[in-house]
Length: 300
Ligand code: PGA
Image 1 (spheres, helix red, strand yellow):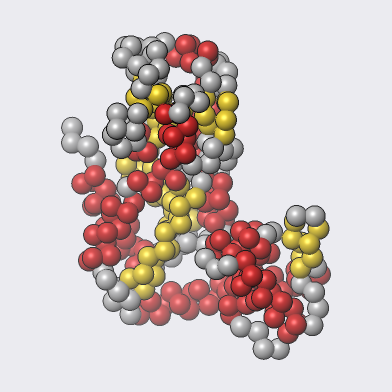
Image 2 (image 1 turned 90 degrees about the vertical axis):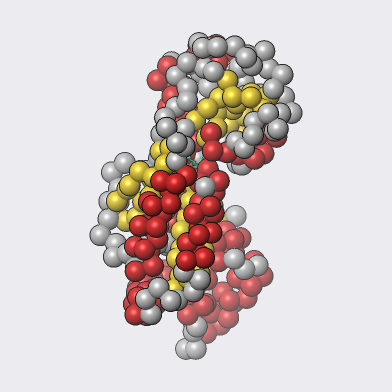
């Protein structure tokens, strides 16, 4: 059989994600390109590997056999690529990082100087929500992860990086703007624009409201911090967002409310699977990140 490594990579992504479109998004190619690779692979194997049941893509028996085999191959190949990159030291190499949506506001500020310092290193940065990040972490798809709520009970290393506090955001014209020490209980009468289920922000907000015994009234769910800010400015409700998503609130027609119990103090964490042998590039980046993140901290 003449099967290429690329075809196996594409097949593994489709099988893992159960979707052609999500695989295309992850590998950064078009959906027709994914379909073509799978078609060619099936021709080589001589049996169907995937079947579409409703909207879900499922594995056939042959597909399951191939997935088990190719996961091992891909793992071996990744280790080979890693050792070659390590042999070449920091002159050349690849760094794969996946970060939650709120970290996109600081990560590029660290990546800029890192890429200047090590111009031969190619960086791939995925910006996704917590759920998607956990999928990738579970499959050991990247070198490093940055997230707000590390999963409990997982075999991971996690190091706190920087403050990632949550604040209550309102339109500038809201009646609470300018009031001091608004009691948390008053949020019970407000409607909120919430991040999607599975988002780290959403998990924390729901936990904080539940701890206070207050119903978190969701009027609308939006999967993007930027879209939520627009919706707040448009008068659709309040939101609890990471402070880092706000540039100049006044310029965005927004205001941060002074509610008791806020800001909710939390951190971003740098995470990787426990026992994972970090590449030279990744280990250098961890060190670089800690030193540069210190520069991003607000001065006391
Ligand atoms: P999210 O995570 O993008 O999944 O909401 C952000 C965070 O926890 O800060």
